[in-house]
Image (cartoon, rainbow over all chains, first blue to last red; front, side, top):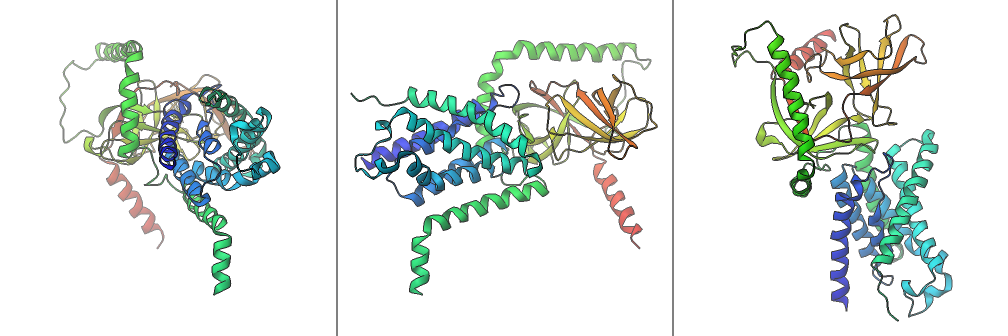
Length: 169
Length: 274
């Protein structure tokens, strides 16, 4: 069981990096919207796992994206931030349900899933564009980009997560 | 001691987070103040290799268009050649050449970020070095920033660090070409004095001050101009000739005299200080 999980995560990691870099970094919708769907890795990652390994892996994921898109370590910083904040966000969204032994992401309601994903995306994009633009005089630009690109990311992530969801009746 | 260890164990995830954050922030901040990092760029062999594979697949889809562009370029050059007064054979003394041109293809193009970099499939083994100029058949594209054995990354004109010497065609009024990160089709020309007569539609070309680009390479036309805050210089919006979203064949220009020019300038400055 641990083994299959491990391989699934490695497969996801590679596929998400390749899809992000070769497809979504070139989308340039309206000239500036490049959705960052690799956040799905953090959304899908098993909940009851070693947190240190999770943060390390997220850093690596961000760094891989950075290598391809010439953005220094901005993706890495943003991804590590949401990896660290993920338990906090989960507590906020799922509340007491998280305590159950049988808690699974797919057993939660659609609204909870969307809120969870949206919060991850908003925090990630805000950190990302703050670091990219790097001046608070352009706060409006940061917010505009966070909102526009975050929305695109959210829609695409939702599509992907429904496309690859495991149905068990 | 016990307490320190307890503290470390208790906050180990937070400390790990801080550790990774500091690493990434230091790389990022370093890049804001200086050149792109030697280490973090897409011209290394892994990323370059993946981009090249993808380029090899996708390049077939618009071969027709690319061929048309190259034919048009040839047509233009032939027109110049047939109309020039010089005989059709020009003796070239290789010791006397000041610019050499290498051709390359773009394998990764970015224009939506604040600092855009382009990756091309030529590198050190094709004798490409840092600070060479990159142009297309229509106009300038950027400057080589980092090289690996087979690939090179180019700092595009659409980069907030970009600063290229440019002038208004047929005059000697020069300024600096920068980008305000707003639109991928418009760059800005600053430091042109107010007394210069300019009109909308004037052509902007590269200036003679730079040792990277030859003089008179086209850049774009004036779209809109205003006076800047000091009211003594123009702030000119230039719309580029190049379609930055659609670039494939590029030419890399090498100026062998650049080293000599830089050395001379360096010596002059250091002499000045005494």
